[in-house]
Structure formats: C-alpha cells, structure tokens
Amino acid sequence: MRVLQIATSAARFEGDYHSPWIVELMQRLQARGVETELLAPSFKGLGDHRIYGMHFYRFRYAPAQWETLTHESGAPNRLQKNPLLYLLIVPYLLSGMARTLALVRKNRYDVIHIHWPLPQIIFGLAAKFLFHTRLVSTSYGADMRMAKRIAPARWVLRWMMRRADALIGQSPITMREIEEVTGRKARLVEYWITSAQVPTSVTPPKRGATNHLLAVGRMIERKGYEYLVRALPLIAKDLNVHLTMVGAGQELERVQELSRELNVADRVTWLSGITDEELARLYGECNVFVHPSIIDRGGDTESVGTVLMEAMSHARPIVATNVGGIPDVIQDGVTGLLVPEKNPQAFADAITRVLCDDELAHRLGTAARKVIQAQVDWDKSVDQIVRIYAGENTP
Image (cartoon, rainbow, N blue to C red; front, side, top):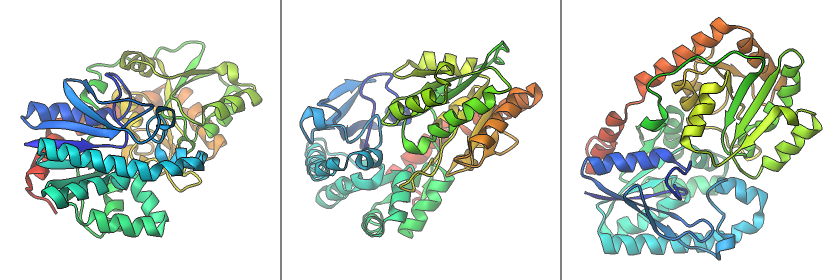
C-alpha cells in the first residue's frame, strides 16, 4: 500500500516541532510495510527534501519571502494579522492541486490522507475523482470551528468532506465537531504525542528559592499568553516565581512588551527553536506547567493541547483554562486545575495553590502521568489507521 500524507505544515528538518505526531505516524506505517510520503506547502522557498528516511515534498506558491502563510503561525492567524496574505490563497490552491495530481499520477498512491481538511481536502478530492484514490481526512479542530462560524466555509467543507471515504477526529471534541459540520459519522483515532515524548521515568521537581513555571506553544492569540503574563505580578506578591516561555510567533513582541509594562520582564525567559532534549529538561525542572488558552477573536481555541500531554507524561502539575478540548484531557482536581479563560486572578490563585501545597502538586502530577501511560497507545492507533486505509470498519 502506498499513502500520500498532505498537511498544512510539517517538519522542515529532523527535530522540527511542527506536527511531530505526523512523523511518528509515518514512521510506524513504514514499519508496517505501508510506504508513505508527505506533501506540504513550502516555507520561505523550502524545496523537496528527505528526512527521517522518507520523502517530504513541497509545493511552491509564491516568491520565497512571501511563503509564510503556514508554519510557525497558523494560516488563520497570519491572515488575521496581514490581510494582504489573502492574495496567496488562489496560488496556494492551484499549486497544491497541481503538485498533488502530479505526484499521484507519478507514484500511484492507493490512499491520500489529508491532515487539516480546510483547504487541503480539495487536493484529495481531485485525485479521488481523476485517479480513484481512496481519500481519508483527519481534522484537528481549528478548521471545524471556522466552518461552524462561517456559513460559506461550512457549506463548502460539508460538501467536500461528505465525499471522503473516511473521516477521523483526533480528539472526542473534534470528532463531535466533524459530525456537527458534515452530518456524517467520524472515527476517533487518538495520536497526540510521540513515544519519544513520554519519559521512561520521572523525578519530582527540585524545591528551591525560585518556583519555576513553564509554558510551551506558538505565540498566537488563542494561546492566551497575555493573561499568563498579567497573572505573574499577582503571584509574585507572595512567591518568588520565574516563567519560561517556549515558542515563537506573531504575538511574541506584544507579550514581551506587556511583561515590561508590568515590570515582570526579569521574571520571564523567552526561548524558541530548542531541541527535544532541552525541552524535556525544562519539563523536568518546572514546578507547574501552565496553559492559558482562550477563545480568540475569530472564535478559535484549543482542540487537544499536545503540550498538556507532554507535561502530564513528565508528572507535572498543570494549571490550564477550561476551554475547547482541554477538559477532554485534564480532569479538574484530578489531573490538573482548570480555571476560566482570560482571568489572570483565577490563574494566579490556582498556580499559587499548587505551589503552596506539595501534596496537591504530587497528586495531580502522578495522576496525570498514569493517564498518559494508560492512554498513549501508538500500536492501537496505527492499527486503526491501517484498517481505515484498507476500507475496514469505516462509517
């Protein structure tokens, strides 16, 4: 069986943070004898390349300096910040369609697996129509929420997705959203974090004069980092805290400026482009992992929160907001504490509570790791995917 994965963004080099679960899925499919390759848009002129022993094809859609519609920040965030980027949508669609059809004609794939159907599913539908290629579509949430907000997008996506051979949701909330938008049953296949991201053993964080907070994710509006920074001076009234924020994106400068305005810039370290080993060390050193996601101005929010599961795998206590798919991952009071979005005081109170109660911190972290150990089962997920590719047990 030959499969072409098509994604909005994908690893540009080995160790890149973009969608590592797609890389693991591809590697595990290869181990099962399923030949798999990937197509994604270029980023700043990036061409075809071979990493992890697999072909990663790229389609060019603009001069190199303009190829920033995807990667580092999601396309919806880019478009919201810079409406001129809407000019790239037509060349993006035409180039992506042409490259998909050329690859399918040349390599004769049995299956096309779309990740993020808006807008990539149109590439798969063209291949299905012209070459009778089986079409599978996985949604991660953002596209479904956009379709629910914008009627024309909903109508078009509903029409296209109903013509796929199988629909997959990566989390319970996304599966429900697919069914709401399309009126079709979707399959739940959970592949959240890579096996390499689950440490074989963990140690409790060291207690010192400074309490270490950690946040990981792209610097975009729906991550809610503004409210985390606003919570810092409230926590610092009673405790010595330092926040490490890992990630890059269009909100970075604004959030950094806010930290200076609130006189907490010396309590924040900003990192990006770090290795998996460095990130694992940061998880191990933090006393609390914080995840302040919000529903942004466009209605987008967190679907799964992969970094939450990374923190859970390290047995770290978590304070997060009660939005999107986060409650599907974090059980309030059991595997973490959930607070209302956009509420710095509630966030500060919850963080302070965990930092001042070692027994609570240990209980939350231990329970969280047990959940990950019980639920992360890549063998099961790949079994499900292979059966879906083969047309077995699909809705």
